[in-house]
Amino acid sequence: MSAESKNRSLEQSLEGLHRAMIAREEREGNQPKPTATAKIIQFPLPFGEDTRAVSNPFARCSLFAAVNERQHFKDWVLIGEINGVMIEFKGEQFNQDEHDTLIQLVKSALHKELGQDIEIPVNAILRGLGRSTHKSQRQQFFKEIDRLVSGSIRFTPKGKPSYHGHIVEDTTTPQDQAVLPAYRRGLKYRLNAKFAGFYDPANYTLIDRAERQKLGRSPLLRWLHLWIVGNAEQYPHKVETIRQKCGSKTKELYAFRQALRRSLDELKTVGIITGWEIDGDDLVHIGRTPSPSQQKHITKKASKKPKK
Image 1 (cartoon, rainbow, N blue to C red):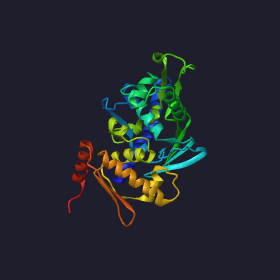
Image 2 (cartoon, rainbow, N blue to C red):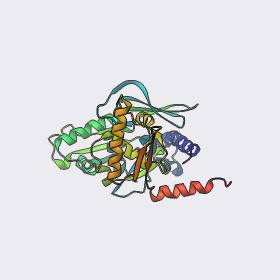
Image 3 (spheres, rainbow, N blue to C red):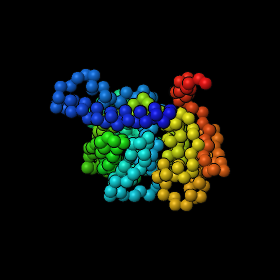
Image 4 (tube, rainbow, N blue to C red):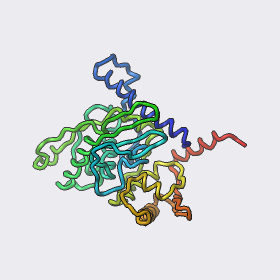
């Protein structure tokens, strides 16, 4: 995808925030509700039980950072800039655990109207995440939910108003989750309808759940996975650029480079990439076979290039 088309796609996502806000006001009775507008706040993602949808803009910055130890940002911090759109964050830092949880929440909201309450057993979500249903895993899950609800995100397109909101608007949970029988441990949550544009057809990638769960706990490995599979074409990037994009707190560049090499080796071992190298200019080259839909996009893009 060219820089121009990426920019247009992301701008459309941000404009979708405004359209969804209007649609929700109409849905709640502030204005008459036309049927055509209501379609804006749907999740029409066509994917099956073994796949998950990942928002490409979320995966291409440090919103879900490649870190284990989280920071708490009392003021807005810049976590990425995609084609002129500034992305800022305030609150307790998200990492790849929150990203996996969000991906599962999106799966559970499949084909349902964004903005309505989704109710699901906690154990069903944990199983979808490939985790155990023990008490420690439930406690970890609720901490991740708390962060998704309380963490604030601000998007600022150049020359346009900012949008400030939360990915998960609110949740409802029984106070006695720890002692309730398993069949009564549930979660009710509501995704922010204004984020629907970040799951438009041009803005999300379908990933293989089993492939994701083979990667273990390394935050850099998991961040690289979503970043790589979300790009139809693999362009070379400086090691320093990747460090900035993923939000790594590794201060020494040589140490980050070593961790990057280990992660790329692992991605090759599990078959996500076909090969990689870091050249003399510290540029990272990655080989990967595009998915059928990505290959279709590449072919379409090539056909539009002017002939010499």
